[in-house]
Length: 336
Image (cartoon, rainbow, N blue to C red; front, side, top):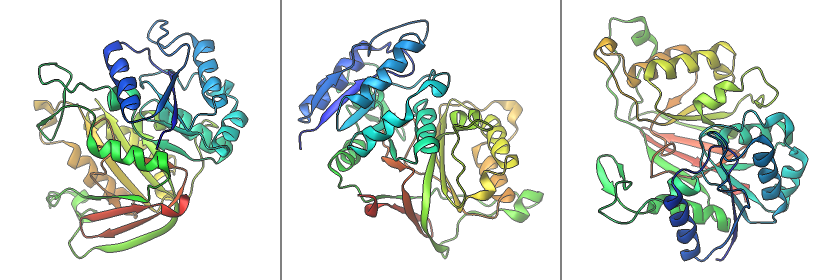
């Protein structure tokens, strides 16, 4: 089904012009009408234009009447724009059918829109990293998932994008990681355990929210972080060492945010490097620690983050979370 997609750059400058062109071409090949914002390839320092340029691009995206407003890439730049954004205009655009889609730095805009308007946006791919990857085996920017070379846009991501854009998406299912029990001699081990095959529970009518952990943490104490109680918080990040991930989770814990949720769902945390000094401290250590600190379920391995294979998630929608052992499902079919 042909849709109108508006491409704009609210954060970092597009450095990989080839990926940009491939992404646009891919969307056109899928049958969509693609409109490119006048400043999509602008550059100022590390940003896609100065603050005024990027702010105007956001407002043009809202006024475009497009079915989807898709960012070119993440990076950094949205948090400095949040006080100046016309949230009423974005809310009206969403009411008229525009789906705002993105990830990474886009988390700042998503959460601000949710806090100011209560409207739903979508956590999903950006143009360059999602649709602009190469399909040629001899080029260096082919991506990998689980160590297996993958060329071209990920099929699952594209299918989820199509479900979102046609209003057919009803949910996402995945299998949690198989985990070893925490070290028995630690106090953490006494309060934390991995999921068992017999575990089964359902969380109904809970607001799904979250995104990039570093960006979300940067909004604590500001009017742009939604005050959600009884929600399902999903988190992901890239190039953050496990100790940094724990430090940001600690901030959310001490701020009372984690304990106010019904569940925490951890996505993909990628592109970090452990060092000898860690002496066994790793991402799983952080997961065990987190489970010892909260009395709510902590799920793992949600297929979302800075990885090729990712689902699209309706940020702000009320969803149902169903867990049966390691199998987990987020269901939002009623959102449409």
